[in-house]
Amino acid sequence: MSRIVVLSGSPRKGGNTDLLVQAFAEGAGINNEVEIISVTDHKVGPCIGCNSCFNRSGNSCFQNDDMTKIYEKLKYADVIVTASPVYFYGISAQLKAVIDRLHTPLRNEFAVKKLALILVGAASLPELFDSIKMQYQLVLNYFHLEDAGMVLVRGAKDKGDVRNTDGLKEAYELGLKI
Image (cartoon, rainbow, N blue to C red; front, side, top):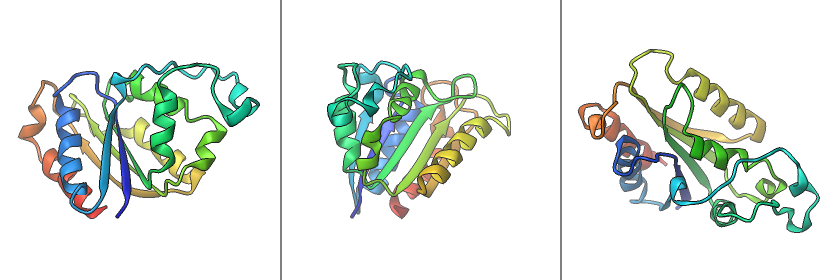
């Protein structure tokens, strides 16, 4: 049994990303402990690249915000799943702020061994996810993490459109295989 933390980056409650995350959690929850963190429910300031966390006691950030709570949950995760709508060929700003704040020595304490990626976008372009997949691969390579899988759903613009795709089934099956 693995501990899975899903970082869900959608600011639209009940939207396509949330539906995919729920399907994933249903599959993964059969054999694992799953926690979903809706990053939009947390106040997290962006990293400013000051590197003060490298010198501060306990490697804490000077920003006193909700990222401290997220660090505690990630510290014990075996698997981290990032889920996001695609805005202008990138992940949501809210999720990006959380990911950027992982530029800290605290990440060296994490137990994570695997990453997974869930993305949904309105466009149907074949290259819609390319830039995000490249960043994801770089993170896998740099931290020597295993790719647990991806669910990439195109053509889901309006709330609930993901129901008209194979995305929910794919997300559930990805959860099952972890």
